Length: 119
Image 1 (tube, helix red, strand yellow):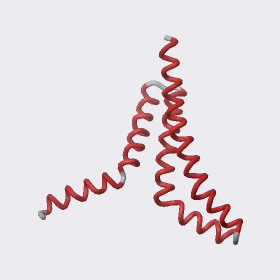
Image 2: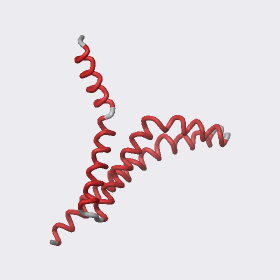
Image 3: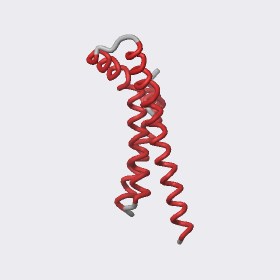
Image 4: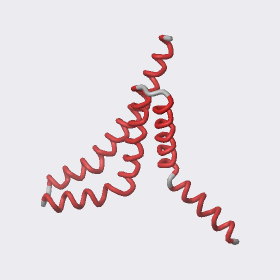
């Protein structure tokens, strides 16, 4: 395997590992461009949706475990209260980021199509 092949494999595997985050980041960049080009509530809603999606992706990948451990140990939760907090951190927050993110993106598209139909 040559150095070029190794670099190509590294770039490819990095892309595959982070393809969702790259897509959400591109959505953020496009939304910011749309906001500068034509400021509107629908474009702002699109931006907010992609921000929630990117944060939810990073939360699931990197933030969830340390935040959960830190919160449970600082509160001193044991037993049922620890299980309750784990359910919030592992199930409720990721679901909330997903629903708010995709809901905002979908609502932005719906509102934009309604605005276009009125013209």
